[in-house]
Length: 315
Image (cartoon, rainbow, N blue to C red; front, top):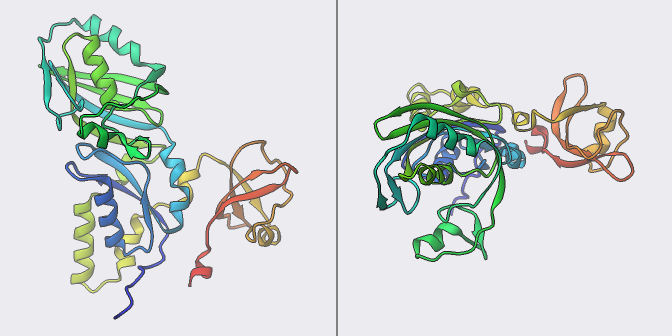
């Protein structure tokens, strides 16, 4: 039996514009196949209903995906007023129908309630786990399990439009914020009920919206490479963002080539201006080559926490 190809060593981040109706894992596997990458991971799932920005980490970039999972997010959401569903979105069944009758002043007051730091009880239709199983699995079986309220922060909640019974909002929020839950709670505050009919993630951390690429665009580029006998890397790799963009908010600590030898072997080193209790981005030499992240240890030294495997070590 022929040995299955492991795929190529390729490091970077693809800003995928996920289509509606597909799972995040399906999208991840398609991107991995298009790039023929040996390793890939996403940075926090989007519901099948949702579209928009889903950063896909390839190769060594997967080591830093957690920092994007923890990053702030921004969403554009449209809620249908007057109907509450069992999943708080249009994939569920309508469980209550009520008249829509509120003033703009009442809406403004209700929206203000969700701004800033609050506590939110996660939806039963979420991927959070209870006794090892995702909540949505219990929900599909009609089982309600206890969930603790969690702190969230809504940095911005902007009114966009109200057309008939459809309300559109722009929400900038902290990690772990469930937009469906905000929508459901808002509908209850307005006395009419509401559920999500459109959800689009427009931003993750500081990544630019205009750098997103869809699966259809990737498919077209792969077809072009095949038709014109072009190397896959020549066609697709220019779409990749550097892997250190996942930790671009960290303070940079630049070390000499000499100290790098110790660091890359897992040894802590002495550096100046090392912040206390902060993760830092480590670069090497005059080229400022990114090699991973580190943190001060108990001896006041820079200790490596997560280092990449350099390309020359992979070849």
